[in-house]
Amino acid sequence: MAQTLTRLKETASQTGGPYVHIGMTPNVCDINGIYPEDLGVHMVNEKTRGERITVEMRIFDGTGSIIKDALIEVWQADTDGLYNSPSEPRGKADPNFTGWGRQASDMETGVFTFETIKPGRVPFTDGRLQAPHISLWIVARGINIGLQTRMYFGDEEEANAEDPVLTRLEHQKRVPTLVAPRNGNTYTFDIHLQGDQETVFFDV
Image 1 (cartoon, rainbow, N blue to C red):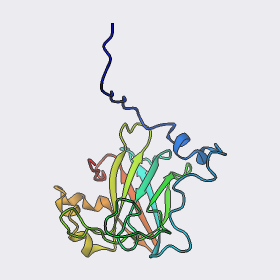
Image 2: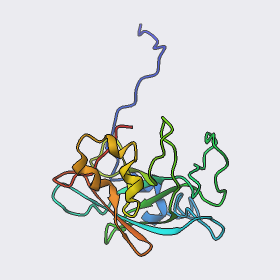
Image 3: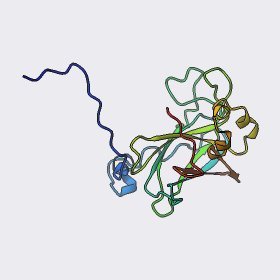
Image 4: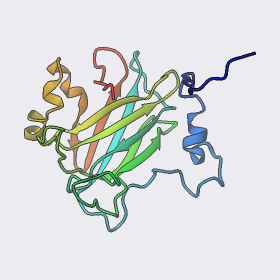
C-alpha cells in the first residue's frame, strides 16, 4: 500500500508561453467577455498626482531580433515614493495611482507602452535612498522562470550615481543596460536577453 504524503510537492516548472497571453491578457488575443479590459492596462487617471510620462520598452533576443509575443509587468512607487500596498509602512500612497501595470507587446512592432508617472525615491533596506526606478517582470516563450530587472531614468544622473543597487553591481560598465534615455516625456528602454548588451537581471 502506498504511503500517504504529509507534505506538498513542488509543481514542475514550465515555459511561460506561447499561451501566456490567453490567461493574462485575453483581450489582446481577441478573447472577449472575461474582463471589460485586461488587468493592468491603466495605471493613472485624471486625478493621479505626479509628472506624467510614457515608457516605451522593447525586448531583444540573442540575435538582436525584437521579440513580439512577450509580456511585461511593472511595479513602482507613486510620486511621493510610496507603494500602493497594504504592507507599505511609511504612509498611504496616492489612491488614484495603481503602481502596477501589465502589457503585452504590440504584435507588429514589439513595443510595450506604459502611461504612468515618474516615481519618487524609496529607501533601501539600510535607509539610503534609491534612485527613482520601475521594477519589471518579463515572461515569454522559452523563459522558464520570469526575469526580474529594473528601469532607471537617464535624467537622474545624481540619484543613479548613489543608488545602493546600481553601485553594488560587480561590473559597473553594465549599469547603462538599466538606464532609459529621455526624449520629451517619453523614456525608451531596450531589454536584451543575451549578447554584448545583455540587460542586468536580478535574482529576486
